[in-house]
Image (cartoon, rainbow, N blue to C red; front, side):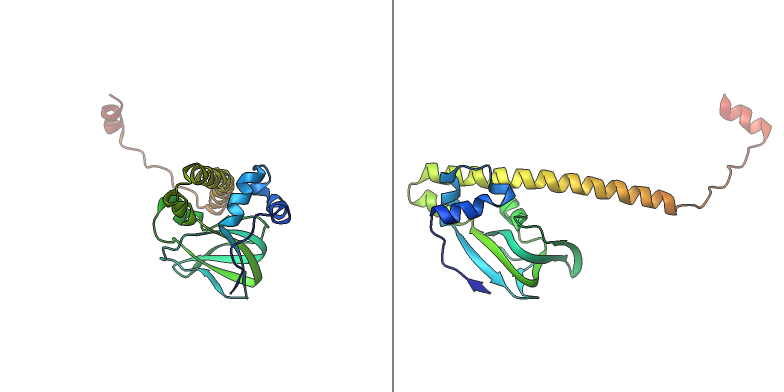
Length: 186
């Protein structure tokens, strides 16, 4: 991995952030705060970005390339869309990483140090910390909504496919003798 220093808050970097779909509606001052807590990381093909079970504080935006997400060794997804967020579940629920992430080909990410928000609280920048947290949670809410919609669509497709593949006719229910039918109907 090749990693930059923490980024500087300048107009050029802010404009780059505004090209990310999830960030384009945020105020310049909030994007500046996000920049100061971020680094650019470049990964080579197959290089691990996130290890399942880890407790690191990093949140990622995919800037270029593609990633593979695996859980317990099974591939669960690939992501290649610029601006896609990953690594957010660990930040939201404060539990260990639920999956591993590897680069497919050369991959570049914006890595946001979410632990830096805690450092803001220690330095007396309460308002800045609150702005930072609100920004993160708004981003999370938007992406979770998108992912839930996609999951719903996949679930509907899977159910339709399962119905089509279930062509085994159900055998007719045997009729009870007439005397028993009378008792059951009573």
